[in-house]
Figure 1 (cartoon, protein in one colour):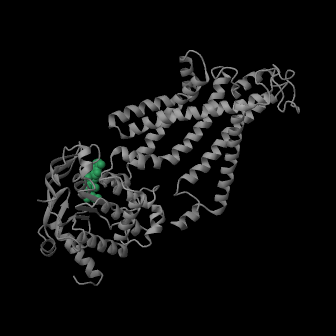
Figure 2 (spheres, protein in one colour; figure 1 turned 120 degrees about the vertical axis):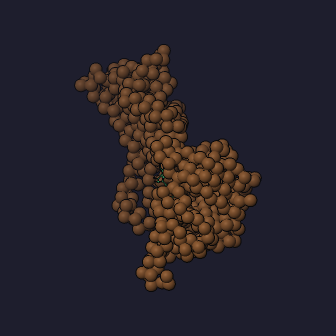
Amino acid sequence: MTAIDQITTPARRRSWQSVTLWAGIILVSLHVIVGLLTLVWTPYDPSAMAGGRLEAPSWLHWVGTDRLGRDFLTQIMIGSRIALTVGIGAVAIGAAIGVTLGLLAAFASKFLDDALAAALDILIAFPTLLIAMLVVAASETATLGSAILALGIALSAIVARLTRILAKRVLLMDYITAARTSGTSWLGIVFSHVLPNIWPTLSVSFALQFGLAAIAEASLSYLGLGAPPPNASWGRLLQEAQGTVYTAPIGAIAPGIALVSLVIGINLLADGLRDSIDPTRRAR
Amino acid sequence: MSLLTIENLSIATSQTTLVSGVNLTIAPGERVGLIGESGSGKSLTAMAATGLLAPGITAKGSVILGDTQVIGASERKLNTLRGRVAAFVFQEPLTALDPLMRVDRQIAEPIQRHAPHRLSRDAVHAAVLKLMHDVALPDPERIARAYPHEISGGQRQRIAIAMALACEPQLLIADEPTTALDVTTQAEILALLDRLVRERNMALLFISHDLPVVATIVDRVVVLRHGEIVEAGPIASVFGAPQHDYTKSLVSAAHAFDAALGGTP
Ligand SMILES: Nc1ncnc2c1ncn2[C@@H]1O[C@H](COP(=O)(O)OP(=O)(O)O)[C@@H](O)[C@H]1O
Ligand SMILES: [Mg+2]
């Protein structure tokens, strides 16, 4: 077996894996550090006029100012916190609902399983963003909480379908039968065999969905359905920069780079994590 | 009183009957072989003994394991019998182990589940090593920390046997336990099963499609074909004077194989 591992995981691929993993770790921790920092310190008061309108980048305002003279860097930094909050919150809600539903479907009678599978397929046919917009529209006012809930519910369908398929595949394995023949209850099987075996794939998908949620949150905010001011979401910054994109392009470029770097960082991290979680793929 | 009494067992899906009219009893300490070609219903019969049929497959008749009627019993009731009264060893040792769980934890699970009270970590570890020693695993400390893909097929099968023994069953059901192994390992595993069954006074239900393999380890055989029993009796009489055409063909195939190898017929 070790011989085969060496064929499928040659040294070059292994070192490349760790490069991407580290790139992911660095990008994500940068956002995490900046996001946490904004809880205690920002360069300027985010809602105060800190300079002239639409100033170009300078030593005082590294990314310039917006059309109301507010410091851009401050808002982008707060955007990191908002994006992380929404991503973590939405994925947590999506995972809690989705994993539970998916496992129920996998263990359920054929009739209930078919019904759940069909419902999930229909839900997934709608774009995540559309579902989230409907949920936000259903709640009275758009808040950070409603955006998180909306995205969490939208993601839960994806998680549930993936969980159901993965769990069903694991349930067919001989080691499940072996556990059953030694008297393990269904609950015991879920916790000691099903969840650990679907976890590597699920956690990668959670990371991808974290990226999806960050983008969807930006889109909601862009459409005015996200967290209201003073929450400086990158989506709202993009929307505000729209009118001045030719005269002050930095206003659109900077939040764009922030969003992309977070999403790419998360994806790199996910790839690297999958290889280190799964011992049959772990580089040795 | 016998350990397992199967009377007039039929197993069917909504479309077809897969097993019908099977009778089989195993007394404590007795060794019985269940033979038949692939698809003849051996595994289904064995799984029905502990009430573990796939959804959509139903069993009729009577299956008494220990002192419990298995057919119609609740899952909770059956879970107390599984492992403790009857434990299984399967054909494919790689897939019978959880690929993501270290070997010691897999053996520890049934030990902890069937223990009358909570065991300390050291007690569990000691019990795991004892079982690994019983199934003659070399270097148990190292293998205990390994993942299934890091050890050989024969070693995996020994782990699977250790897991079955962990519950101290009265009946060991071995479903083609040597089929996936090479000839040398096959002989080792057979010898191991023979020794363990003897030392621990277990009954054995040994399932195989291979008459010569079965003959070395059991006292009595039941021959299954297309889900029905075609012949049953002590190994010597079935081997020496087969009654049914199908059994005759099995025996002569075995003799022909021996002759081809230059062994005694
Ligand atoms: N879950 C199932 N659904 C439908 N048919 C099955 C199922 N499991 C086994 N069978 C059928 O039952 C027959 C006996 O299977 P099995 O007991 O596994 O045979 P074997 O003697 O090789 O162990 C086979 O024809 C098989 O196709
Ligand atoms: Mg079989």
